Image (cartoon, rainbow, N blue to C red):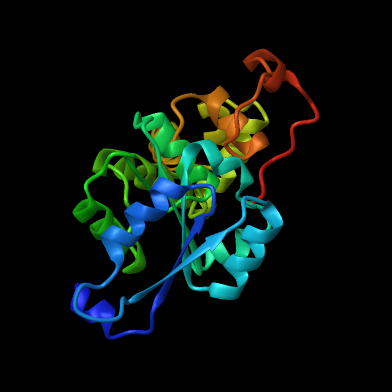
Length: 237
């Protein structure tokens, strides 16, 4: 979306904490209109969870701009629904710009991360992009997150045959036993197993069993304990 198109729409609210004096000045320098009223409403909030939550709810749609050292005051849990609808978005200023930090902020619910010493023009570009519906993070980080989402999404689209095979794997069946039970060839079983592993993002039977039991989350259980545990229930498909 171009700046001209954004300007034609109603003003967008940008929230900054009162304690973030330098950041507030940067926002004003970067975003205030030079030839007339700004397309943004700039608002400041006391550094308390209650005040931030109240202001966010009052000014939706809004972008909360905050430094990483103050991220703990953001009421992510209470804002979850608004963040999910992208009525509230969060841009973090941080000098910690390794991939794991980007991913951590993303999983918290942040829309973008930007270096503290970014140029004013780049800051404005990031704000415009976020209001236009984009995520502001390195391409390789977004690529990895997208791949992860694809794997998880594909796992919910198992075929009936793949579901049957996953259930039998969880019960400890070998490929030959699965073939006998389903009245198909062993090679057909192997073909389905390869497709199943690809969809749920695993490489072995034990990982498939962990996936079925824990929904893809990690486990401290050992493979032997999982394969011999009679309490393992076939996954729901």
